Length: 220
Image (tube, rainbow, N blue to C red; front, side, top):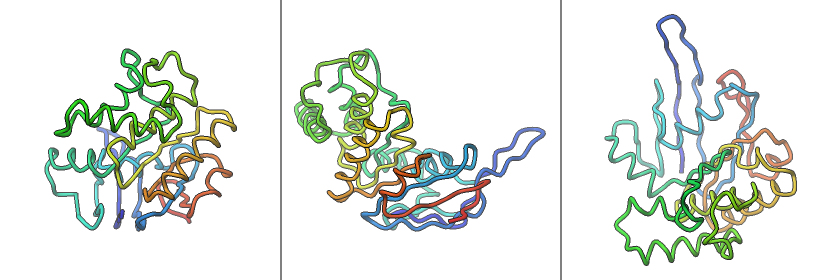
């Protein structure tokens, strides 16, 4: 489902060159639930951004579902992200002035769907994360765990094949963290391929495979 070959990412300024990722080779199969771990600054989020087509590698090749994507236009990549990928962030990134259901509908605004279709899909996604009773609430009225569940609903509303989660439990206590992981496990059982960046060993142990990074290189 995701293939990375000899991926390098270099950040350059006028005086400094930083190697963020160094020759990463990674194959993630359809239906896998993979966790990525490593110390802060080791390149985890950079790797996730490259998998999610939010950033380009300095060298190497990226393929999603068998299709090489490094040479396509920005418009094509945006369309591919919208159709194939769902993103979950540590900081939720909800819009406070929009209701829960309106936040969840956002990815569908870039598709040729009707308002009725968007609402039905958003309701279905919220039911999956146990928040159908909070559709008309606003983010400020929700707990941290509820906000993350809204963020997950937004990520899955378009029925993506791949879900990329960057520290999805990082801002939550252990009880809420386990609830969020349970939702991700259920989505994985339903067929989604999931890649999760985490600092939590216990969370990582509950996924199919662990990838460790250190100083931009894959060590496990």
